[in-house]
Length: 360
Image (tube, rainbow, N blue to C red; front, side, top):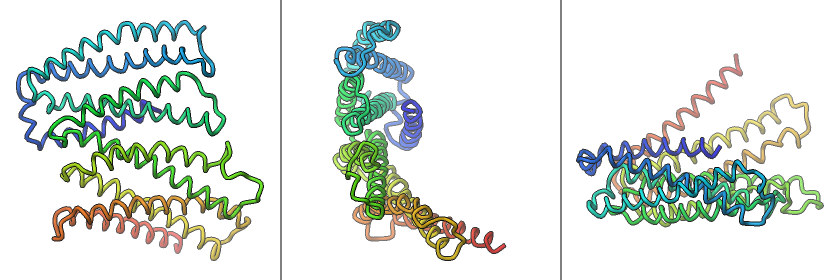
């Protein structure tokens, strides 16, 4: 699951960087001698970084006397030892080679290869940090097993993420790091959205089905899952969006994220959730219902929770767009109107289609 998520994000990042570099002035630097060397150098550095971190994580996890320690698993022990002994020295050698290249030519920092490396390793590290946090939170609040590898994964990959994230922020112009920041912002807002809708759904469910015996937070309570997900996503969103991407230069890529992810995604999720909510209500009053109200409206908590969470996402990004856009009817304003109109048209067409099908 982690690798699949990373590959999808990597493809998304490649598309972002490809479009940005095609139309950016720094693309001329890629035509200079050494382009093949850069991609070979950064690709080798990326692979060795992962190998080294995997090896160190495995060995460090065995040092923590928490949970089950697989000391008898000699195959994994040999693999982790090999990754550490071979990977770490080679990683340091290639990293030193890259550092010397940057010292000889400062424009190396503006190349596509260097930015792809920083973005790839930062996002990959972030995903593994999220995975470690989830395992640790499940162990602390839901009674799941905690192992030493979870703690070592958080430490090692957290250090990798912090180092590469800070290195990317130092690059000038800072807009070169915008691709990574927007991907991280999307991850943060996605986890926060899921956490909020789970919390809202759990609270609504408790209000209408509370029997006075169930604790507000328990091992099997969805509210616990929502709080854990929000606790993971909110800090990521604050770091990548509030403290970085929000303050960057407002170019087409920045507005594209706000329009498509924030406004478009929030509006689409809100309309979908409200449509299902209205559907269940209309079926109850005008349809043929053969179950009790509790069973019929059991999914209503999810749709209401989704509409509330998506509404928060929509309102925030819509207000942000109005604050940054010009008072005149600029291109950004036109694109915003087109996006909203397209979503409304698609929703209306779907509704009319369902009505005609019902009549026929």
